[in-house]
Length: 132
Image 1 (cartoon, rainbow, N blue to C red):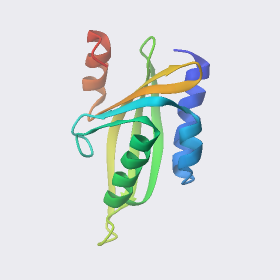
Image 2 (image 1 turned 30 degrees about the horizontal axis):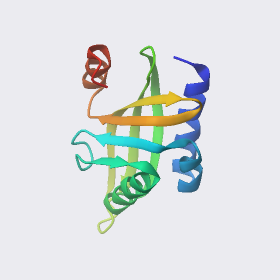
Image 3 (image 1 turned 90 degrees about the horizontal axis):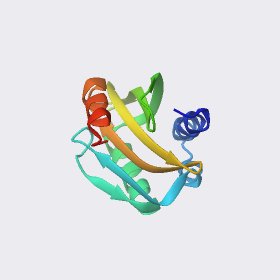
Image 4 (image 1 turned 90 degrees about the vertical axis):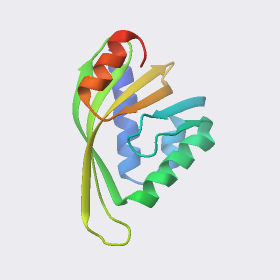
């Protein structure tokens, strides 16, 4: 795991928490792919427009979103991050939170692929098997 790649991931979470999608796009390859394995909506998103759609879908599901990086795992090439997403229901304002695992593939200082998993075990198994 490269420290440069970890810094890219940290910068993305920081931009997310500050509500700055344009800063996220600056760190994403134009052909970036996001695969959500039934965590938020189970869909896949491609390119910068896809990233914006993914962020918009999350914004509809959670108000006042904030992500906390709990753990970074050395899994070789990808950066594996365990995160806690906090927010509130858009209509009820009831606090909501979930713990997820993100597998980030970064090359040349840009995100090429993000896969979202429900558990750390699921993510690590996918990385070890080469499916992540």
